[in-house]
Each structure stands twice: as structure tokens, then as C-alpha cells.
Image (cartoon, rainbow, N blue to C red; front, side):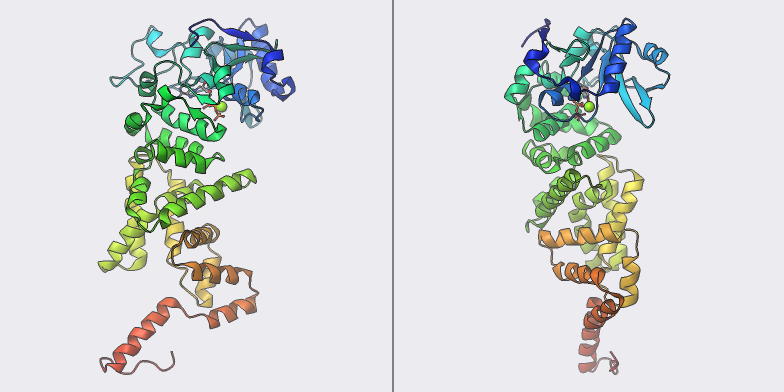
Length: 440
Ligand code: ATP
Ligand code: MG
């Protein structure tokens, strides 16, 4: 690996199409440069432009300090404590501008890494040459100056990009210890780009995944959403399993996968992530609440079943099991209440799909969570749970006219009702109870 000298790569070699660079980002860079600062596009946007992909956003790195950036741009807001950044607003959109950082162990302030070697403060400003080394992967450490078309490559990132390699800059164990989220980022980029995680980077991953347990649950929630809700969720999930990372990120899901001998749960997770990827590709919305409903379903179902066997009524059993599963998950990744409340509703409604009388069915159809709960039911059926009849009936019920709905309810037997009736009939035929109602 190169150790300090940048390769200056002209546009004739790297072929970044200048017209694909966001005009606002070019303007911001030009303004910073005119004021005497260095400024570049950096990170994911440079990587994606080189790969011919459309960048998600255009991040800028500069020698200007956050306060200096604010002085230059009226619409600038400074954010973040652990990592101070400038946001330059255009209506509701914004561009992110970060000041060059020095690697944490070269700064003057000694309080940036804790006893386990984890970075707790990353606000030590530095030069461009220093900023390169604190970045995670070589393919994420390329700097592009749109004003002269030059690409700066200090770490052979261009070569790794051409060979499809995810390689941590520096010594992998140290870099993962500094920030265990880099484990997740390696997997995310490998899945998204179809790249291979290079051997030295890959070697310590499984044994270091336990360090994720020390990362704040709020940050892990954000990462889970990036991992599983960015359009390559299924491939990412498979890599999380392969690298032994899942059990430290979503331990309840990992346990469920081991416990469920039917394979239904594993199928449900895969089907759901595949559907989610497809929805994202079609520009449709996706719900974190649904994702958690799937990931924790097996635990909830098993716990609810145990409670029911012990005599707890079904609805209450589901409610108690949901509370336990969400509480256990929150020890690892946060699940904001605005999502977990919906997750609970999706689970709770599963116990109401047996009902077949018109009044109850119509009420359920009008429930704000009906759609999500019905999709969840269909997913369960597709994964192999014995709920295909319910899924079919509810499919028909939604399509039917008002008269058709009445017919469907007449023609169907309320599953619970019919069970109760059978029990009562049996009792009366044994002579234990006086006269079952003939009207039933
Ligand atoms: P995406 O397309 O997902 O936005 P990205 O590479 O732009 O990918 P960001 O999270 O936006 O990812 O980060 C921007 C850049 O900041 C990265 O490319 C990388 O250089 C640097 N970076 C981000 N997170 C870390 C980290 N945990 N450790 C080191 N460098 C990081
Ligand atoms: Mg980015």
C-alpha cells in the first residue's frame, strides 16, 4: 500500500463524467476554494461515480473549520458532537461538508479513544493527507476536485475499486476496535457493490463482531436500517449470517433461526427482505416496524404459545410476548417507540384473522394497520405457516362487493366459533351439559 504520496489521476484516466456531479456541490467547492480553502468531493459519491452508479449524496471535505464554513454560507447549520459537521441547506435538502480530520492517535487531545480502543470523539482537525488515513476503506478514501477534474488517491483505492475489493485502511484489528460499526459497513458495501472483502480485512471479522455489543443501541438501529432497508437487504443479511455478525446484532433473530427446525422462520426472513428490496427498487415505501415484526416473530410466537398453553388468553399472551421480545431486542438495537407500537399492532392483529363474521371482519378491514398486518399474514403463509386459508379468505374479502362480503361471511365458518360448537356438542352428547343450542 502507498504510504503518503497521492497519485494524481487525471480525468482522462478515471473517467468520472463531470456532468454527473451535482451542480450545487460544485458551487460549494468552488466557493470554498475561492476563499482559500481546499475542498473536494469524497467518500461514497466518488466511489459511486467511478463505478458508473448514481451517488446517494455528495459529501464534501474541506480544510475550512466548521465555524469558517458557517461564515461563508448563510444557510449553513452546524450539527453533531462526536463528529461536528456543516450542513448547507437548499430548502429541505442539504449538502454535508466535513472538515479534514487527523487520525485520533495523532491529535493533541488524548481523550478521544477509550480503554478498549474505541473512538469516542472524532473532532481533531487535520490536513487532507491526514484525513485520508482516518477513513474506513480504500475505495471510500478517494478525493475528487471537480474544478480541475483531478482525482487524489493515497491508498490505491482506484485499484481496489477496479478489482472489486473492500480493504480497510491500516491495521484491520485496530481499525475495527476503534469503531466496530466498520464491520457492518464492510458487509454493507460488499453486498451493495457485489465486492469481495479482502482477506486481511475479513480475517478478524467473526471474532471481533462481539465488539458491536458495546456500540450505542441508537447507532445500531440506524445501521440496521441502512443494512436491511437500502435495496440490497437480502444479500446483506446473508453476509451478516456468513460472517457471524448477525448473532451480535440481532441475537433474537439468530437464536430463532437455530431453534426453528421447520425452516419457516428462515424462509419468512428471506422472503421479506427480498420483497423489501423489490419495493425499494420500485420506489415504494418500506416500514422499519414491519422489518422488526418479521425479525422477532418467531420469538413472539413461541413465547405466546407457551403462555397460551399455561392458560393465558390468546390476545393477552401475544401482548405479553411482544413486550418481552421488544424489551430484549432494545438491549441490542434501539427500536424507537413510533415503530415498536406499529410492530405490536401487526402482531396483535394476527390473532384476529380467524374471525369470519361480517361485523368483526369489517372492523378489522378498517383498522389503520390492516394492510401491514395482512401483508404479514401473507408472508407467513408463503413461508409455510398453516395460515394460507386465512390469507386467501382475506384476499377475497377485500376484493368483494358488499353483497359478496356478506356471502363470504355466511359461507365461512368462524374458526373459533366452530371449535367451541364442536366442544359443546361433544359435551352434550356425553350428557355432561344440558342441551347445546340447536340454533347454532
Ligand atoms: P453511502 O453510499 O452509503 O452513503 P458512503 O461511503 O458515502 O456510502 P457515509 O456513511 O456517507 O458512507 O460516509 C461518508 C464517508 O465517510 C465514507 O465514504 C468514509 O470515507 C467516511 N466514513 C464514514 N463512516 C466511517 C467510519 N465509521 N469510519 C471511518 N470512516 C468513515
Ligand atoms: Mg454517503
